[in-house]
Image (cartoon, rainbow, N blue to C red; front, side, top):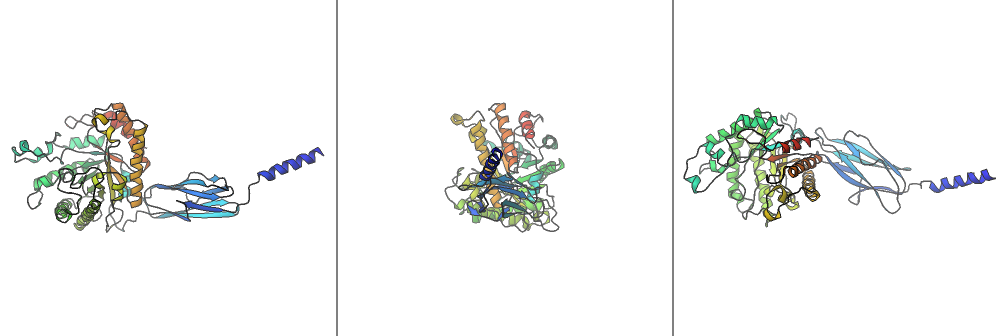
Length: 465
């Protein structure tokens, strides 16, 4: 009798623990029922909700590029389970996979698709995504070919030689040895900012000697085995002539296009290691560094960048496929500035990438007097992560890759240990979102080729995966 009662008790316990029969299985994204997920070429993820009233399991048909955060979960009567679906960057053709979720006799299949590079047959250049994939870290050769001094002291010394211009902001004449030292330290992309308008005549024809010097420095970079970026630099900014103003656009774009036509023609036969960047930190007529007061500023920027793409492509040669860089208002990363950017129409897909600058937190990266931040703490980390993620999310929406064209804790009065914390953290955050950045100057004394901030350089490269 005892054995019979015990057996019934065990059976009763088993029946009470039995998983209920599945009657509900739905998958949601942003509270909308789905049967597919679509990704751009870049790496990314979605959080999906699983509405099931019985335990469930999940599997993916191709785990080489799709990963899921959990492969099983419980059923609930009054709330959902959640899963993160990640995809790796795709440098090949478009691809699909299936995510299958099973709950009892119910099954739900989610088709996961990801765009491919979509390169034209015979395209001789690597795509913008491949370029990003091949980058380690970059360096800005600032205060050199971008120098544009003015004032009576400068005017009294006119005329000026090319080397006078190049050294007027305190840097030495660039030599192959300087570029080689930067490349040998591990930086594999060097941005060479160039200001043009001070080297053009009344008809906007660029001085031949100046163009020759720019080409010479570009060759130093390419000969060192690096990628090179050239741009239109201090033609923008607080003292520049190129403004994010729709009323100025009809006149200014004529000059803008003429400059780019001359630049593109000079470099039309260079290979895909040379990239063009439309312009630097473009501002409106009020020189507003925050969000511009007029939304038409974004319209002006987008028109200039469409003109940039059209002008470069029209010069033919390798410029037909060259990777081109566009940027936001002021190269900023606020939500409004990012939302204001649109991608130009291009005859060849996947040869446009974006760029923004980040010196965040501003009061840590720069000397800001009474508002100075001297310690790179958790609140600083939160701000950096927010900037990187906000920027990455927007460019994922736009469907193009991006870089941080300038970054750095450039206030050298901050302690080295805190700047090292910044360097390590920001590179990790960039890498987590599939991108990298170019440090703004500093680090090396170009006069004697000594790395006076070698600790930061080491921290930057030690943070790479």
